[in-house]
Image (cartoon, rainbow, N blue to C red):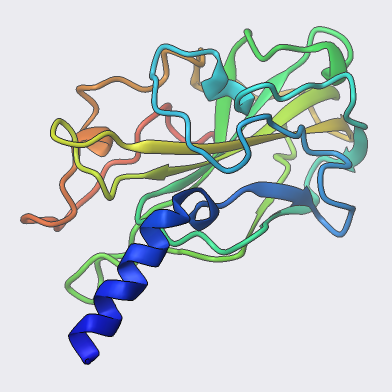
Length: 221
């Protein structure tokens, strides 16, 4: 009976595959999608490394999203509808809009401000799979409007037999109080992630004792 129950549970999960994923839907204590662009593919991942959907997700519209004011050096939190449960890193990026964030398509340069990488200190990988993720607006960036992007790169389907999955959302923020003295490593999206990146091709099921998060280096002030 125990084996039968396990098989039945697995079948039920497969039948409701879409509901098993997750969405970064909320910034701080604001309402879901008030300042986070809402996508049109529900909670399905983006898997095409050449797609513009890697920026903020499929159909994520800035025009219908509000922009919130934040101070350089202040903390912010992204919250999901359900906690992350796919193994892989969480990364947070920013890209300065040439004008209003609501009108920006994310085609400019992106820089990374945070990685949540695995901890190997116990002898095996321990991932930060949470229902929310907190980081800090860098103190040294320029004032202006930005896209604030969070991604979960799920690597539970190792390349090349499987396809890693990106779960992505963008918030719209207006930063004040920054010193403007930063010079970060930047990248375009798409373009920041390649099929040859060790962090993309990593196999968590075989000799997995180190990990390099894909994308540019995390900026420091």
